[in-house]
Image (tube, rainbow, N blue to C red; front, side, top):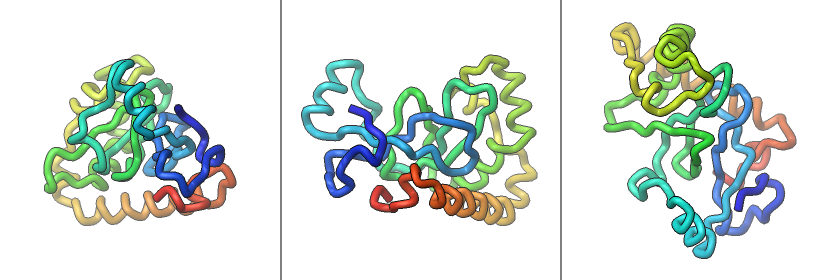
Length: 173
């Protein structure tokens, strides 16, 4: 039910982009897979543990690779599906700045705190939710959001140079 994006027809509505962990990549990327979203596949998923809540679908979020020695956090687009290999946090209100949160999670300070909270290589959602944006991020929110948006754009542009990147052929946007 999971394929590399180049293994399927890009014109088929059967396949959706899947963020599924991957290598160290900050801000954006690791969008190599698609998942079968046909009615038959959905029935199979439901009979084997189910899917995440419908209220979480179609929303942008922040994702990462669950098991890694060096965490990196990336933007999950609203059209991307995710699975247990790529835990995802979703904003709880419109006031939450995805860009500022993403910048903080990728900062040395947050990674040091995360290592103290959980010194293993398994980075769970509960560990990430323990991290809080420091007041300095709120005080400089516009600047942090702008820098984070630039990092997202730069990483997306770099991905466009990779022949294996779905972003080289933007049909899965």
